[in-house]
Structure formats: C-alpha cells, structure tokens
Image 1 (cartoon, rainbow, N blue to C red):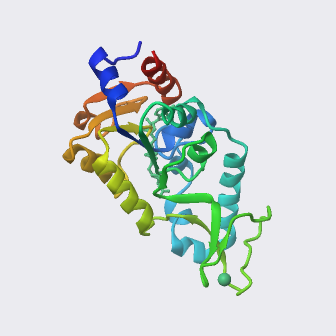
Image 2: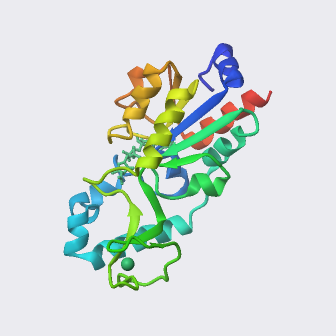
Length: 242
Ligand code: OAD
Ligand code: ZN
C-alpha cells in the first residue's frame, strides 16, 4: 500500500516543478549494481585503485578495462519502471527535472528531457591532454589514444575531482526553484551531490524519499517511502492520473 495521504497526492498533482534526485538505487532494478550495501561495487573493488586520477595514470589499462566492463553492463541494461515513470511525469507536471548521480544514461534513454548529470556519463570519453570528446569508442580492452597522443578517459567524476560546474549549478537552480523534491535510491552520503537535499529543504520544497531502507537524510524529509523505486513511482503516477 502506498503510504501517501490524499493531501500528499493533491500536493503532487498541483506541483509546478518536480525534481527527482536519483542515485544508484534508481538503476538497481535495471540490473546495475549499487555502490554501498551488501552487493555494492565498493565492497568488491577499491575506489582508491580504480576511481581516481592517480590510479588511472599508474595503471591506465586496468582502469580502462574496468570501465569497459561497466560500460558493457550499462549498454545491455534497460530503463526500468521507475525511470519510465519519471519520464511520464512530464505529461502531467509543468516542469520536471531529473538530477542524477548515475553515469548510466538511463534517464535519457527513458525519455526524460531535463537532466543534470552530476557525476558524468560513462558513454562519453575525453582526451586528458587536448580535451577532445569521443562518444563512440570501439570495444577494445587496451586503452585508446587520442590523435594528439594523449590518453582517453571516461567522462566521469572520480574521487578528488570537481563536479561539472554547469551541471551542478543547473541542479542547484532547479532544486531551489522546485516545490516538490523526490530523493530516490541514494544513500545520500556523497557530497557535494547530497547537499542538494539541504538546498531543497531550505528553499521550502516538500521532500519525499523513496528507498528500500532508511538513510542519513530520512529524518529531514517530509515523507519517507520504503520500497523499490520501480514499484513506488508507477503507483504514485497512477494516483495522479486518477
Ligand atoms: P549507494 O550505493 O551509496 O546507495 C544506493 C541506495 O539505493 C541505497 O540507499 C539503497 O538502499 C538504495 N536502493 C537500492 N535498491 C533500491 C531500489 N530498488 N529502490 C530504491 N532504493 C534502492 O549509491 P549512491 O547514493 O548513488 O560516485 O552513491 C553516490 C555516489 O557514490 C555515486 O554516484 C558514486 C559513488 O562513489 C561517483 O562515482 C563519483
Ligand atoms: Zn588529444
């Protein structure tokens, strides 16, 4: 049963701008592993050996191979009912923004238009020397090189790196303007991304969390819905269509 009152549903129906702030749990039902928790990526691999610039310079082939492996998973995955529900909200709400920490491109593939990618996109790559972008890269295990001779890296944010400024600024503006802010499938422990939840709060947005368990920020929210995003979001959508 959906734990939302009639007033909550009315609030969603009347919202002018809804932001969905997503994390790895958003794509869990698409078969993409989360980072923390029982089967989390960071239980099996060490971020300090794979997801930072020094590791890349020390062992570029190993880091490249790991991203090729993840790229392959993403390529064969499909948006789930949660991603599709967010895209469908666009038909019922004047403005919908998806702000994601995920690099899997699934919000876009589901049909969302207004997207801010805080941690980059695994389908894009760029040369570390001349910054030329490469979208489609042949499937090779060996790390490719740019025409200029520089190494090509995935366009994702590694530990110790800044978030893409335009994406974070856009996300902050949308967050401070919205009247309803959904926090979906994130442990909300990685900053500065998680700071958006506080921005939403201070600017008076109604905050609804969807997660299979309580998180660090559950007590900050107006509603904390326990369950899978691929089930709960379609249920909410059904209610607002009624
Ligand atoms: P985490 O792995 O930290 O958290 C995933 C969250 O999703 C947890 O709170 C789970 O309980 C929840 N969850 C799992 N399955 C779910 C489902 N089906 N429905 C709803 N919730 C579900 O992932 P993030 O919060 O995204 O950064 O992690 C943030 C950042 O840490 C990532 O972007 C990545 C990582 O290091 C970079 O790579 C820069
Ligand atoms: Zn180059």
